[in-house]
Image (cartoon, rainbow, N blue to C red; front, side, top):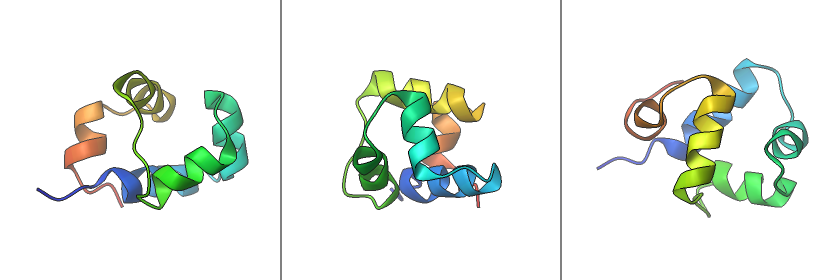
Length: 69
């Protein structure tokens, strides 16, 4: 199964013209943590995954299973 999470959150962030720091601050995480998500080096726990989906106004299913670029 293809992992779409990392490229999707990066594409969504760029589409909204947000910096990694802004998203991290809004989600109350460290910028480095957000960067690791975008680079595919880390994955959020399910509660944070839900928060990310809500932040970008998409479903968790879309974040994980659909190419959003």
